[in-house]
Image 1 (cartoon, rainbow, N blue to C red):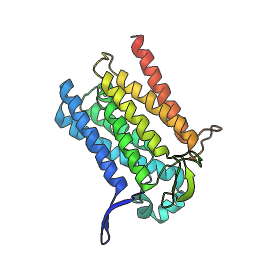
Image 2: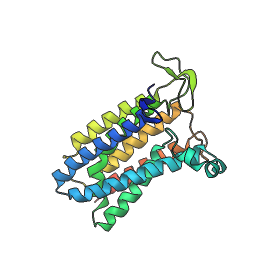
Image 3: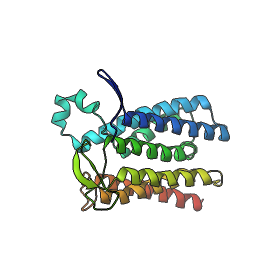
Length: 248
């Protein structure tokens, strides 16, 4: 684990923060290539990306706090919880980013599905890089395991001295392959919304399966976590969109 890459006095640079920054940079570069290929406005990309960053980080933090911290604690110590190391939830970030980018796209009269297809591969690789940050900081690991590659996170969030599944690495590798696949086929589809819908199905399926290896927040649905319920929602949404494209 390398939670801090550099520390000078009271100033420190966290590995998680660096990987999040790298994930946004990689995503922006890929989105820029797609916007240029499709003849979309690069100026608009800047506005959309800023909206995605704000909505993504805010949504990820808010959902994490909602799932893990009592409201009373948040009210009493808001700064401590909001700026705590780690503590971001993917689906909160996804929904926050989608909401704000949808608003910007609508105001700019850009088809949301065109935008979704343009950013889907970038979202996959951004998530993959971000999960490496979770691994370095010791966050979002799995349940106990006796597999040869299981590891402990004694300084993790929360700490554990028991060997556990490094689910962060599992997710990073799976989403890397999702990125490679989406990037490879992105030019082959002539159906607007297909690539983004496929991303929703693949990303949702990955998270649904991984959740069985983690101790996460349970949902009102028996034996399923909140993340799994959200995963089912986006999978069904992606499937519905693809079937609607095939029938059109």
